[in-house]
Length: 273
Ligand code: ZN
Image (cartoon, rainbow, N blue to C red; front, side, top):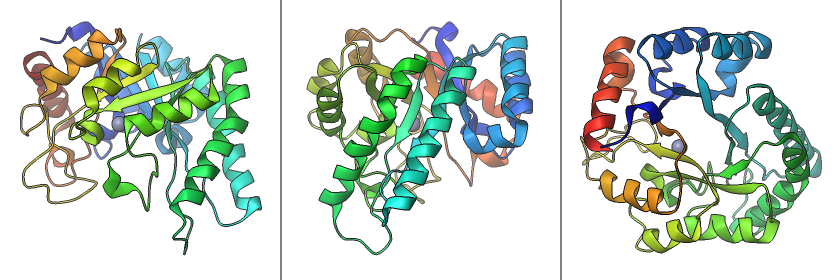
């Protein structure tokens, strides 16, 4: 049974119901400990206002989503993206976020060179990392399920993410999202290897059938992921931070009242995580 004091909700879970200000107020009213903030919603709210709201409501920011998206066809665009990552580091620092989530990016438009895309990711992370270290913001590489390798993220396993961390050194670790890693036959060993470098732990469930590759995540307990087993692995690796519920659900949870979604998250968090 997960400790309710460790519950954070990724605001994407109620992105259709709440602005950032509304999400902060609603989560706090329901006694949720943390929130993970998306940068598009942050832009609508304004950074100063967001900082004031999270402080005023006593919420901890379990992560800022998201930076990364590094590969691009030309140098000018790659630089633009690195600059955007630097801005994200500053935003995460202002919010006192536990980490900046890195969704590394996929293939540049028209490219078939996934090896090259992965080199761009490594090189760009190497450029952003010194500023993240200086700002005290841990970078959390989130490996995404391989079905997203082309269009979202060419870092697809924990092993691959940890290889990058090994190469880049201090200040960078991983975000473990059950939706992306639950199928991995090497999961136990890689979570052990990640000890001390897990900066975020995201939970939801994998529905059978999955009707949409991006927007049909399940509520914990409604799918096939052995959440308690993965939670035990993550705890075994020493992670004791907030646990974040992150559910993109266009046809179900995004259509329900925000209060119902939050209450269900709380209940399932205790029962299933
Ligand atoms: Zn995630």
